[in-house]
Length: 266
View 1 (cartoon, one colour):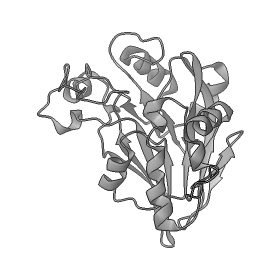
View 2 (view 1 turned 120 degrees about the vertical axis):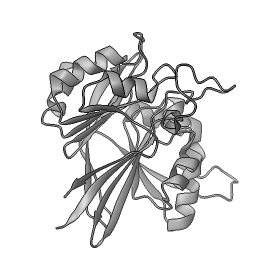
View 3 (view 1 turned 180 degrees about the horizontal axis):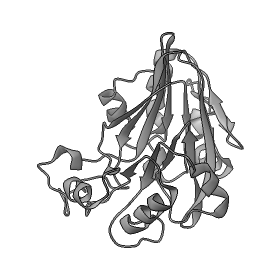
């Protein structure tokens, strides 16, 4: 079947985005639009002659603007990596997706992330007593590979657990692409999921070490170990200017930018 897999970087910024509020660009050149970064999110699409299957990874606080820019008005599912605010607090805007499709949206998270989401956004999953608004989301547990169906055919997300400071987070492998936006250490059990990659989209927060995120030098060491055909750096802070990072990294390693699209034929 002809078609393609598309991976769109909806946001590649750290938790406060670039620039920071107040116009703080740090070392990033404000004249380079690739340095304007919303919070991390990824859109995965499988397009065939029959249609398109679209799945969102994480619901950042910038989600509405991200999906408008990507011209997305419907989704077949959402998967979450973890429960931190910069990855989940756009959840309420999924209501607009449900308005468009007229059916509850299927979403997936691991146990700790489910607990956090239901605690913060319980109304999205269960109708509160006395509320006229029905729930919009149907929650499913990530306890192994997740296959999401749509008009373009199935998309399978294989999870693997990594360390993210005080909590664990998930990365996902989709075909020969891996997405790992928040990680400080990769445990032994996760490394097999990173073998034979065409592309690795990976956390590289800043230049100095950080207690919950990989810094640039550590990410480059991991990339050398895994040897993907291509690597894309994401979750970047204000000290990582696009042109500077591009110049100092190997040719097969590039910083992400909002709106970057990575394509592979089916």
